[in-house]
Image 1 (tube, helix red, strand yellow):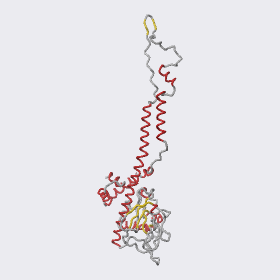
Image 2 (cartoon, rainbow, N blue to C red; image 1 turned 180 degrees about the vertical axis):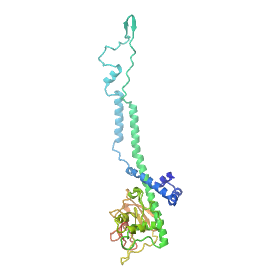
Image 3 (cartoon, one colour; image 1 turned 135 degrees about the vertical axis):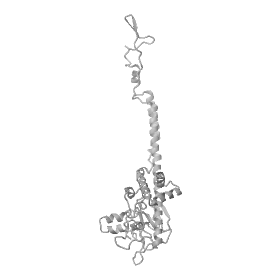
Image 4 (cartoon, rainbow, N blue to C red; image 1 turned 30 degrees about the horizontal axis):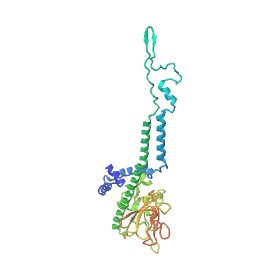
Length: 360
C-alpha cells in the first residue's frame, strides 16, 4: 500500500489504482491513517524542491577535465613523487655519490673471516613509498567522481520534475473532489455555499467549513491544500466547522482562523445586484465561469502555490484546467472584479476568486 501512495503522490498510478487509493482515503475506518501516511510522504519530498532546476555546467568543463587527466597521468608516470633523483635513491638505498657499499659489476662482494667465507645478506629492494598513488587508481577515482557529478546534474533534477508533475496531478484531483462536493451541496440547497452579505463571517473561505459541517469533505485529509505548501508541510492543518468559526468571532484566534480556513484554494466571491445585495452562488454549470482556483497572494495578480507559475482553475461544470500565470487573466481578471477590486463581481458574469479572508 505504501508503494501505491508514493505512485499516487507523484501521479504515476493508472486510473484503476488511483481510484482504489481514493477509495481507501474515503474509507471511514482506514482513511484517517492512509491520509496521514500520504501527508507524511508529501512532506518528505519537500527537500527535492531545491533540486527542481538543472545545475548550470561551467563552460569548457569537459575540455579542462580531460586536459587535467592527461597532465596528471603524464607527470605521475614519469616521476611518481615528482623528484627523479629521489626515485634513483629509493632504488639503491643511498645517495648517487656514495660508492662505498655498492658492489662492482660482475664481482661478488665477500669477506674472509677465520678461514670462512662470509657472504652478506641478500639485499632486498626497498618497497615504494605507500603514499605514491597509482595513476590508474587516481583516474578510476576521477571517473567515479565524474559519474556521480553527472548523476547529480541529470538524475536528481529529473526526480524533482517528476515530483512536481505528481503534485500538479494531486491539485487537479483535489479540486475535482471539491467540485464534486460542491455539486452535491448544490443538489441539496439549490445553490453553492455562499457567505453572508455582511458581518465577520462574510469571507470567501467559509465554503470549506460549510462543506466540513455537512460532512462533504474531511477536515484534516488535506483536500483543500496544495501539496508542498506551508500549510501542508505543517502537518497540523484542519478545516474548522462553521460552529467553531462562529465561536471564534471577537477572539484573537479569529483572524488566523479566517486566513487559513479555506486552505490553499480561493473561492468565488459571487456578485452583487444593482442594489448592492450579495446574490446566492447559483449552480449554472457554466464551462467558462470559474468557481475555485489557487488562492491569490497579496499582490492580487497571481498565486504563490506553485513555483513554476502554474495555476489550477475549477469551473462550474466541474472541469479543472491548468494555465501559466502569463495567460491567467485574459479578458476577465481572475482575482479582481470589473472595478479592479478583490470583491464580489459587478454582475453575474464578473467572476472573482478571493482568498480565504477576502470579503465579498
